[in-house]
Image (cartoon, rainbow, N blue to C red; front, side):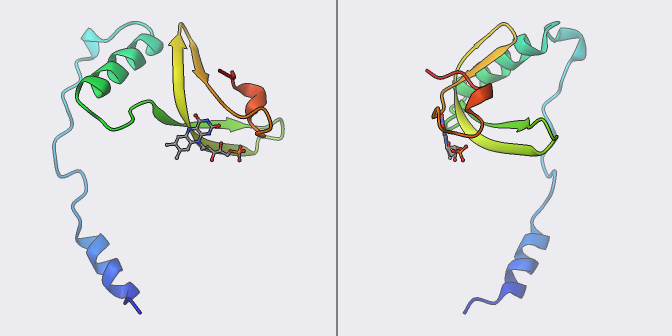
Length: 98
Ligand SMILES: Cc1cc2nc3c(=O)[nH]c(=O)nc-3n(C[C@H](O)[C@H](O)[C@H](O)COP(=O)(O)O)c2cc1C
């Protein structure tokens, strides 16, 4: 059986924030966060990020209990993000089926 202590040591030896973050010029950002999202998504697509349209959607129910799951983005128009989901899913009430 694998020694769990060795994984702990391997994890702790890994660098964190080892590369500088890309420069972000705040004066050059679009006014709308949705527009910025599209700029960054297109940059991810252009740079070959695998499945850049797979994203985690987090919601809360009326009691404030959070839930999150991975969905494929089908479209993004204005301030609306459109995902496809099974109509039987617990979160389908807040999603758009495609
Ligand atoms: C990469 C990836 C993409 C996914 N895309 C979708 C999706 O577009 N629609 C969907 O309903 N579930 C998708 N899933 C599965 C959901 O994350 C979730 O596990 C599944 O829909 C069950 O959700 P439920 O428990 O609310 O029924 C994806 C999972 C992964 C790992």
